[in-house]
Length: 331
Image (cartoon, rainbow, N blue to C red):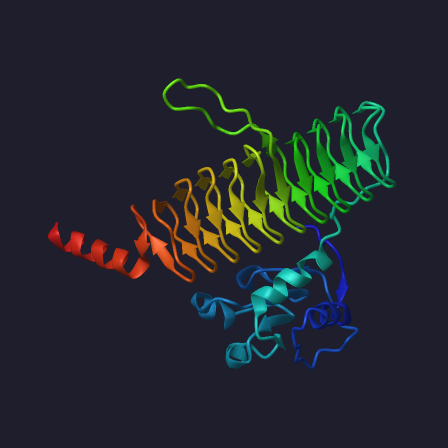
């Protein structure tokens, strides 16, 4: 595999300390690393990390030059692998991973002659718009934005600074706050699934979508505009691919939502929520802060703060596990 970038230890230490992670190591500031690799695939010029006890045996055979590791595990490191002691190795990995990646997308300030910009759209400085992308009327694009090819932006869209919009994205009736990443094929701000049940008369949606700063929206994810107000994704949230967010849903900050999750309309979700893949959440529910919903769960009732739930209908995960055991013993 081609090396991405040579990084000095002083640069690694700076970014960790900037984010309030204490670093303890005897490594020289001028020491360099060529890649970040997993324990089992690392070699003598690489940096690795240890964050899961299940890989303890692999740790004992690690070939990396150095390893991000908690103090209590350094006794298992081979002599040739130097410890970089941090309290949270996986967080440290996340912070420094971009140092090794020189393929980060930034705007080159070029607007393709094969794109279409409506006269009533506003484009700030240093915006890149690639071929066959359309910027519709009543759209505001702030500085340092990158928009990939074959995308359709607007109408009624505000894209704030430092946003990355990948290819084949559709955004309408939305406010995208700064630092967000919208991945390929996402559909944001379209009309939701709403109609009067007896006559099937379609309900007109006139609201919008607001995506908080530094959030990431996965490929082919759909976020519907609200009927009247706003569908809201809180800041620093990460939505995986193929997620469906219906109209008037609100999701707090720091959400982690895995692939194929579906959230029905007007459900209110708190901060720091984790939702496993293929979970389904009914409409008009209230889900508290710090809730974890296991994969393939079916949520039909409100959930209080700090609960961990699983199953269908979803319940406390310990109760669910007991039911699984009882049912298996009956067979």
